Image (cartoon, rainbow, N blue to C red; front, top):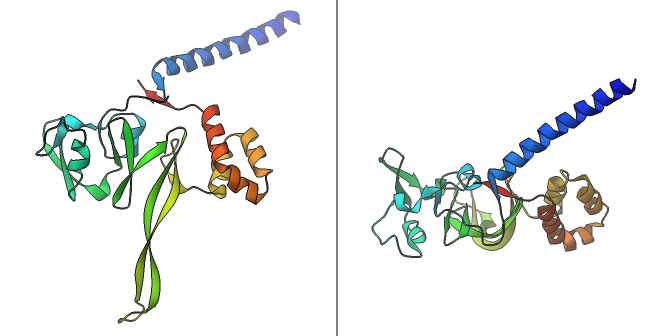
Length: 218
């Protein structure tokens, strides 16, 4: 009986060793995000390029300006389209409205609508603000079912889920959803009254990022 128990324990120990070695190997192939992390400069065609820190390099952007300029990428994004060379050396053209974002001078910018906004908090849950334009109805329009409205621009808060690449309005309901991945934090946050949730939403965002460190491929 003792021999059987020992074999079972040994089996679990071997399984644990395999898991730990795989985890350590994954960590060794990754770099933890910390303040001052070095982001590669360039444009992100999609979220995956940001997630892997592998943008279209600054050197492959086709634009008539000195690439040594600190604002070279921002300047190249001042038009409706941007051109860049692919791995075969062919020039590709991408509409700005199709870009995910860009990185320049160790700062990351995400597109929201027609503007690029700096991600101020980077972690497993990122945070940024962006101006959003809504239209306030001023009455019926000239044509049937048409409404004219005055554009109203407001600064709103958003979060980016680094697990899926999805962006959400930054509010208590969003945090409840994202914190559901961490039973302890979810229990603490859901136990708060609604007013307290709104007051402590940033605190729990920070707590989550501290407990769930962000890694980029090396």
